[in-house]
Length: 448
Ligand SMILES: Cc1ncc(COP(=O)(O)O)c(C=O)c1O
Image 1 (cartoon, protein in one colour):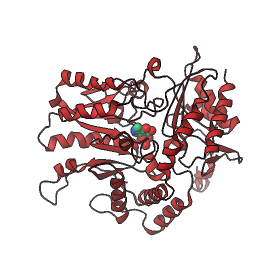
Image 2 (tube, protein in one colour; image 1 turned 135 degrees about the horizontal axis):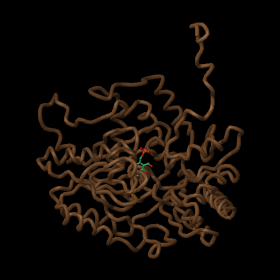
Image 3 (cartoon, helix red, strand yellow; image 1 turned 90 degrees about the horizontal axis):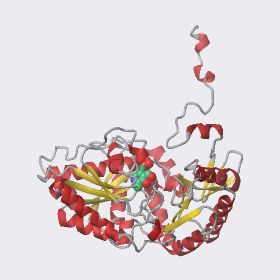
Image 4 (tube, helix red, strand yellow; image 1 turned 180 degrees about the vertical axis):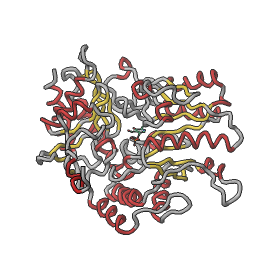
């Protein structure tokens, strides 16, 4: 073929759905019947043909301030025109420091230091690495074990899937990190079904950490990581007193406690962080998603002052922690983050979530008694609805619910296994809460 004939290869590339391998998606089913979103505003998504879909999931648990909010859009476009990028290593830019201070001021106690990443998965792996390195630099390098929890989701990095507790996220990927153990998950339908908020049963499950310590010895354990509320395995609020007990056991043995707040951060449970809701101070908090209301990828780890200080020895020109990302504290993300935090404060969105929690929980419980509904759990502005599986096709009923909700009824729901997970933007109104559950009820009634 002559050069001339090949001058415009782009023009010959078909614009079809084939080349994009979609994440955590049933690719073949999607490509047969795509669910495409063209634009969004406030509480709604819009399809290419202009159909409004009420967003009951804040995107993927991230658009807490609602969609395409003007102040965030303005901040991102101004920043893009002013400074596209500054090297993250050995250089920086003012908004990185400003955002770190703002996040640290929202975190409890002496969680004063913020390390920036770009995704929740990076934040988790960063926290685990900081835990290992912390023990190393203080002369306790034998503390290499990491403890996660069954049914935990801590992203998809090798660290995160190792401490995570979802079989499908682990079983395809080899032997993972060595030296990891898991706490039992906290869900028990017999004891907890249809609970609003934190279930009364289950605090004792934290005591399993004592057993794990007895097995491995405290001198080998670096950190425990849990989501205060497990989101991605179907919305599991912590039993009353459970997190306090974990904290006490970690204190007893010098084990760091990490809260993975990628979902629970930035108002989802009615406070800046779930740590505040539960009055339990971890040693590190991972965050992502809500920090920019999903507008630009950003994540990070908030770390206690004493952990940071432990690294600040040695020659002043030397790097203290050998870790970081090209796009740590990217200027666009920092601009989006600052504008988002302003919105949360000006509109009182965390307090709004707190005030709406009882309305939300009551509305969610109206689904009780509908066909296939086995359990409903609520906490903050989150609800999980378990459906009975079809014996011949586990997961199919929830999948059908998601498709019908989006394509026919006009509400976006998220599914995980056979659970519908709902987590609207924090700007949701009382009437929209009613609309969400009316629509979800309609979907459930239409299932077979
Ligand atoms: C608790 C938790 N940790 C980590 C992650 C991973 O975040 P990302 O998808 O941004 O890597 C998620 C994502 O939902 C999450 O819920």
